[in-house]
Length: 338
View (cartoon, rainbow, N blue to C red):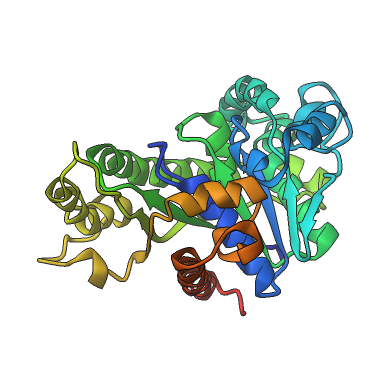
């Protein structure tokens, strides 16, 4: 049985995606679910949240070791195969395969092999390359007996993200309350459906090809890419953006999600707070965020020794309840028992 892959994706950046994954990873680990996090954003911001720069420098300075996602797949750019991933054990039940700024160089190969995978002959190499992220994910999950794989990707619709989504079972869409997030949502739904159909054509092509018999142990991801909901980032009050401006966009999210992501008929007068597809509204924790970053902890793991006293202490407890609720809701949707 393969470990479920959950990817957080919106082609609009700045919606709190990386912070969301970081906190959910810590929460699942605290709930005794073994989680492995993959940083497939070439900017490697999630890696920087887990590790300090000295640690990252050492990891990036070990080419060919399998210490980053790019190091694992880079051999495919020549004549070799993927290498076993070397995971960073962040805490009990929490593991990371670090990102790598060099990953952007893999985009050209993925773009080249996408059309080649629909040929009549020599299909193994393009299918191996296009599914390489999934292969590494499952190798890592098997290595540590992971219960869930969490994936962070950049805000693009390029070849890297297409191959990540091909490897993905479930998709969560982080959103901000603004026009740009809504437009990203409108772009994302049709793109996911298109990629899913195109990958199915490639699976069918591979299954009907005589070459499949030569590689009986070669498995491929099914590319389900099932959207299970969205998470909205709560706005912060700013003088140049009145609350009414945020409310305008918040009210549109439920029906934009239905129409463009699920291809459902819009519902009348549905509020986000009543929308079953809204997994959560993530609060702004303001100064707690910088405090958590300084101590390399999740907000809900801050203690009085870290400076979380008084009202901050109450906010820490609220954050713990909120993320526990969200983690449980997601687990139920993807069939992971807590």
